[in-house]
Image (cartoon, rainbow, N blue to C red; front, side, top):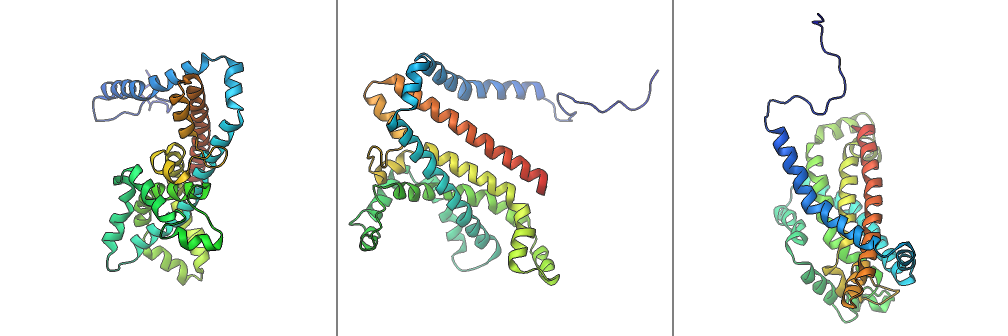
Length: 283
């Protein structure tokens, strides 16, 4: 009789002192199926009823391609901008103590609480040609409202909290003594940022980018006001879906939605792979 230790191998789950694994797993799978899988499956099923020829015709339509390009392009740019400035904001809130710090920290969450339509109206009134900021930019030849630039600004506004709130807790765990030790060993500020701070912050930064990007792709309320909704210029994909629904063209609406779903899944898969790689590399 073999009384030696059991061989290590793959297990469906690790032993735990907390009971209820089967019940909680079943509830989780049922909940995800009802809330996510069934609606998405219905979307794919409805678009598949079109047939490959009709679906491809809608997918390669010039207006559809332009709307998808604007939605994904502006969301990517806004998420990249938020990665830079959101990390700086998190750095200031964590590393410095100054009057009004708590107010500034609370203001970061304002886009979460503010209705997106209100944000869109406020941004449009500011950046319109006769707005407070827009009228200062017009003599310089810079038009923000009713252009893709306005869409980027709206997406930066609603995406900033995702980066700040993702990076901030990780930055709080990095001890200041680590930076001071690197400085005493002769490292300059650039080396401290790239070799000491960035490796620990990289997974959080990638997570914040993916959250801001995902929110920007599907954003509707804060964009339609400042975008101007001009076909082939500032029309976003979610708005085009609404237009097709108002035209009772449900097949085209579901086809565009299915294309957005597929592209979003691919983009998030790439981001998650990059996040996994960064965690393996930097720990």
